[in-house]
Image (tube, rainbow, N blue to C red):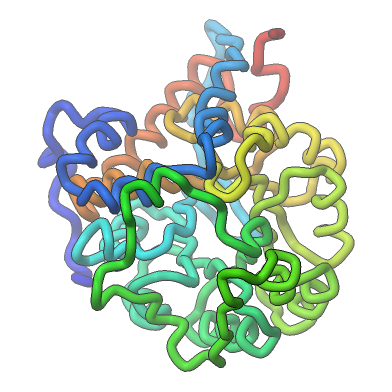
Length: 366
């Protein structure tokens, strides 16, 4: 990954002005099977659609003549100052979507001062990304069937200087993704999750073994979360929480933060949209517990709405991969800038000078 600055954002074609434009262009840059893998959701994709549609259930209260001079999108998470409340979510196998894969994403994240949550299933080594990163890197952990394997990955992330561990808890087994199945998606030869090299082999259960005697026998439980908390001093977040009671258990078990997420609608269909689950989770956790939202963010006004409903920050996934496929690192950087500018405009027109001023009072009654 080059450490040279990105080309001027003016190099972006004039018709790429919003996240939806990158989504529109991405099919011209990706193999249809890769596109099905990226865009598809679980089963009938009801939750996939609901994640984005949920934002239309909330309207914003504009405020006029407010003095918002000197306003800012600045915030902080776990003691790290951030320029804005937007993070890049973990997305696996980014080498599918661009030749530079995660290296291009990290370059864009650095240029735009945006934390990047690197997937366990990345196609670039953790230490390679960290050695050239100019923005905070967090490590997303998929439990690999044993405490030994999980700790090996955590130690690699710690050694490389990653700033937090984000354990995905909502995908102990893969969802039934019919769009992906119909397209015949498979990883191409030579593309692999390179950070799993050297881990103990975990034999896959035979295809005819029931779920409860197969994959779920290797899944983690709350005792494993408590153990993991005892093994690292890094902030530990649990990603994939929807039920308020699970959020409370996460806090009680030692998690430092929670990501309200349904895995982009990719694991279990017909579950609540992330945004609809957010207020109940915030109500149970109180005002001060770090809470992030993942799922459906496509506009700066979506970020504003999530913050008004209780999120401290948000993650985007598919949108930045669309931008990566279309225009590489430059596309990802441009998309981040677009979303931040949209958020700034929304804040200004709703009379909010800072993120702390955004709250439920900024949303009009339904």
